[in-house]
Image 1 (tube, one colour):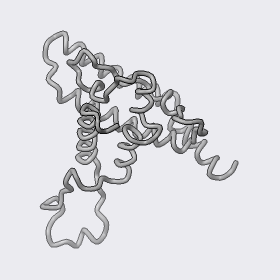
Image 2 (cartoon, helix red, strand yellow):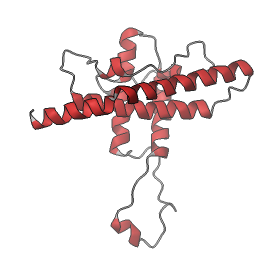
Image 3 (cartoon, helix red, strand yellow):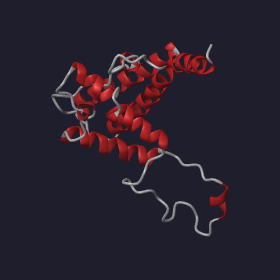
Image 4 (cartoon, one colour):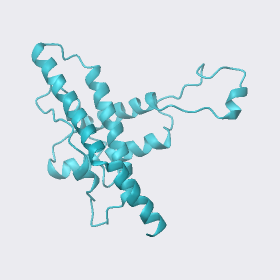
Length: 181
């Protein structure tokens, strides 16, 4: 699926964003270094990402139950670039993740732990879309209104997830499943 030009572009941009925003906590050994952190120690984009970021990429783009595969099951011509090419006629706003979180690409049982990871990945993806929106050049009055509407949509999703207590719901279900209760 990543051989599609638009999807590869979106994947690369999201991967780059994750690489820039993931904060690594130095361990004890790094505090004794002669050279201060940050000088010549930056990870390159083609190096391995933090495992949390790798999971987010998988859940959004490559796993069998990824967001991309979920959207494509409903709209086969969809490309992830459609979420952040704000001036395109093909632009599609990011949707609430609940249907995707509870969707399985096969007849597998939906695992609460996996649903929790999907929620986390969707949160990172929304942050990426917000970043793309904030750095876009939508400056005309009509476009500023569109920009506000897109931002409001992202905020509504965030508030809805919070009010529905989805992280807590799936966290409790996952813990119960792990403990066998």
